[in-house]
Image (cartoon, rainbow, N blue to C red; front, side, top):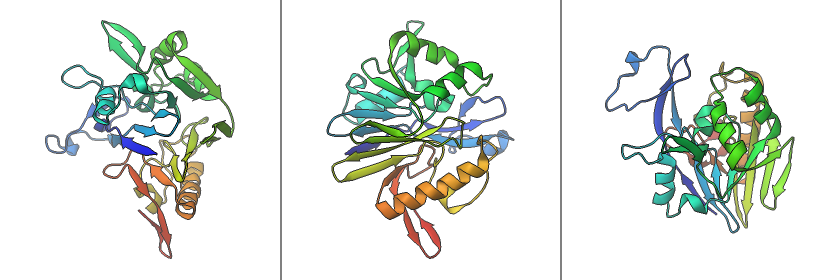
Length: 253
């Protein structure tokens, strides 16, 4: 198994749910009061049978007009057309924006040859809940032009890929475990978005069920440490891929 973090950079998010690029070398956080500062790291995972994108980022383009996600996939030595699976933890915009790309004024799937694996009820929620977190024009494109497989509850999607309905960050959020020979990785999406959250216990206002999300971080972190899973931290600032340890003082990153 080979894992690549496809960093889209850092952003500030205010009450309007707009993601504004933030470069600490150029910008001052004091100029953006009331904003949450996040880092966005979709992942590319190569196994013996698949090339997998795990959550798709914001879908922003670089100065040359190329999708940052596509550019990073090429840097990793692959073509976006090589992607066979797209596994989605949930459909908030900072995780789903890169599912589509604008070309000649039209949106089209970013990974036309891939099977998109999405929780059925998360999809329904995206269409029925009035929220700036969901951009339904993305899902309209997928519905027309992409290969979508809907899953529910907990299960095994295929050999080496298991999923679980977690429901902490959003009501139908899901997490994934990937196994490829001796290699094992865990993708917790926004249930375990950054390693520091294992060290600090807190209830976050941005989670659908903050207490449950806090408890899930403890559960998933403990399992990862005890069973030797590599963790993929979607919103990590500096270490998006890493192992978790446990000692008498708690988690060690």
